[in-house]
Length: 470
Ligand code: UD1
Ligand code: CA
Image (cartoon, rainbow, N blue to C red; front, side):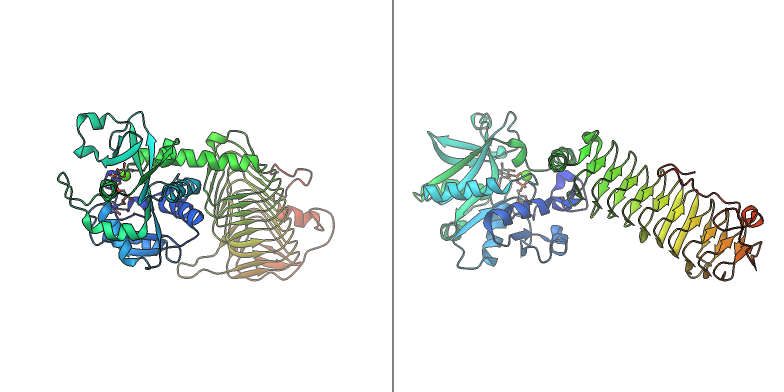
């Protein structure tokens, strides 16, 4: 795998082959194709300029250093030094062809074997062959490959080009590679010059003619990068739709290759799913949602919300306009509404946090009602502190919880109270700072007296609705 080139046309400080398509670096796709076709661990040629790839692909490939990018022939020479002696057949791929399919690699390997050729090349016909090496034939035989810079006018008119995917007889390659001479035009060692050398040696040269030019087109600049990503994304989207995902406007959906979607998931228009995101059966992701590295269970509704490294259990409803930050864990059938922010916090089953509120560094039980404007004041300027709220607690509107604080099971807080001390189970906290009172059990919100209800004066959800916040 040749990946030592400078990639100057990307105009980037990042090595070309580490630019992403659908959330994975370009090189990852080509390594997949190489592995699938050969069943071996690919050997990647890198240079000091592209050394970052060794870390990015540690454990997924072997690496050989080309100390300076002196051309594709020199890159293969560097690879051969690192290649075990018993290797009898070598496939050479370019790291910048992310749409390459394993079957195409197999085809060039088979073309070489069938002809017992020293080398097999892959060719494709282009409407505009500018920039590529042209395949010069004598009759049906491939005579040589001539690079654009060295080509005559007649040769430049040839529309059959070298796709940069080769198979070699390894023993012949080891002998012949030393015979490469620097190009007069560029001073580089051209791998493509081996075709002529093979013919001079009296060896056969095979060609696999491929008909998909998009698949073999190398990425040289960011326009080609975007074009290839669009193609890749469409392939992903098609695969998901055929596997049972409904997309109301597939062209507006942005999916990373790493995303997993179950059957009967619905993605509306303008949805972005990234990284290790997984969405379970029957869940609906509505317009304007962005999910990064997040796990959504079955039968959930996510609406115009941002989820980052968050987990949402079955049947929960999120949004519109909620922000689940890393470590947010929302229990089954919970409801998280407008302008709710959650960070490093677990919310239990059936808990409701409907309107503009912040819950951070907290453990919230089941069936808790978090009133509008509730804030866990978790940061004292130096350290973060935890809030714990027990099952069935009822947090009044505009409660400020100055952590660390524990609010017991079934406890209440009054509207506008600032809770600075623990509230025992079943008690009521009211005022600034909040004082603990007994709660009389009568009518009102679950189990509260009319007075308590007035004090709590919160914004409990309408239990009849399972989508809309109250
Ligand atoms: C090369 C071919 C050309 C072919 C085209 C297909 C040669 C001389 N020419 O041209 O016939 O039509 O690919 O896309 O081979 N690389 C190294 N070390 C180097 C130089 C390059 O590892 O010293 C790697 C690059 O990272 C890249 C690959 O080799 O992955 C091809 O290099 P590039 O410079 O893109 O070659 P082209 O000029 O496109
Ligand atoms: Ca290229």
